[in-house]
Length: 564
Image 1 (cartoon, rainbow, N blue to C red):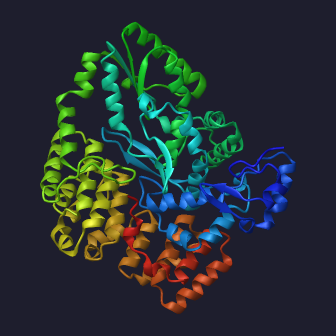
Image 2 (cartoon, rainbow, N blue to C red):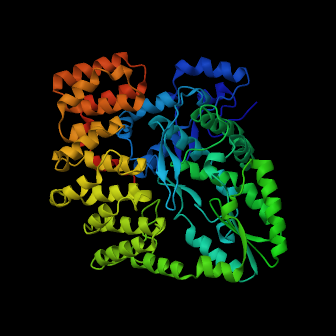
Image 3 (cartoon, helix red, strand yellow):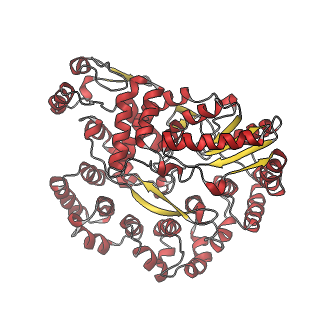
């Protein structure tokens, strides 16, 4: 008989009379929807996986998304405010059936610009899917971290996992540790193999990921099946790829690399890894050539992953130090990072010495000008500078960023979260013509940049007085952005026009109209929302309607959407 571990039911009878504990949170029998007991019992008797999300994992998911974000590349969905408003009902719904039977919808996607050209596809999960995904990963995270090489080894440097106050990671992204470890290994080597994995997140085998989780803790085998099944349904039954954007994906990516780190540790070479970026050290170039061949075969045979040919080379330690650690650009980069307050990109806590508020404005301006002079955007510095300006509410960088918006497109999310934080009416009057010049039917050319620009403009009533800006916003393909603008500008006609077609809309668009219905006259709003509640088969639609009916929008600030 299977035992009850992390919500996986060993014996249904035992489950129904016991408590479950995760992170000190005890969930009582009252939280179980007894309508589903017969279904759970039938599945169990037929030998099917009957994992139920634990109350503790769902509470962690709520804390994580509330404190941080659901994805790194889209504004945080306003639906989460409605979900938190009906949180008890949401938890009951998500725990009313096996994880394998929870509905899953394909995420929405956008092409996001890379700093050195090209694009990658990034994702935003449906809000309920984002909660389920985070809750599932929360239940396996500790076991994954336990199997990784210890931090002090300098091998697995990226994102050390620790669940605390809604955070998945203990502190920092780990890139400084990666550099330090490479520097130490260079002292004991003559040559370095540099390589990384081609299209890593999109190529991860879900079955191999399942195996990695189950190997980390055999009692997580049911959960491993659920993670694989969830991601497969998310991918419309494709057996590879994890979403790019949610923090939970970082944990799963690290899980797939556990045996790869072990493989290299068995080869009598030193190595350090940052996500999928490897540095392998030896006193013999021939030895590294052999390791490269063995590694290529291992990655193919066991993960169906391949190394990026254009990023793979063996160089002397002297060249490695000159090119990667001690060249003029890297030294200037470190100097720039030291000149601004460097924030942990995940927790937003200061990782280096605090910059005096009096010197921060000049430091951020100087850093931005040097960034532009580099010619290729340095993502780390750009984020650090923009987040410093946001933390100190420094207005001056705004004009530089708008005049070089395409250059900063790879950090558009940071740019417009910063703009949202520091913007005022005087800036609208000063920069309206600069912004108007940016807007044409094909400019800005980046989908991600256009999305964030339209999102930002939609919340600025002064800027929305410009006909060109208004047309740009209300032609955005995302109805959520148009709804944001309708609310900000009190555009009653837009809401009335859209609500007549709500049952012909997709899920994101339906909820956007429900969100915007807050500006309808009270009687019209209440009658229509109750009609939606009675007719919509989708629980989230009902919770959105209830949030608006209860006046939750009165306490909603657009700035609450900011994920960092």
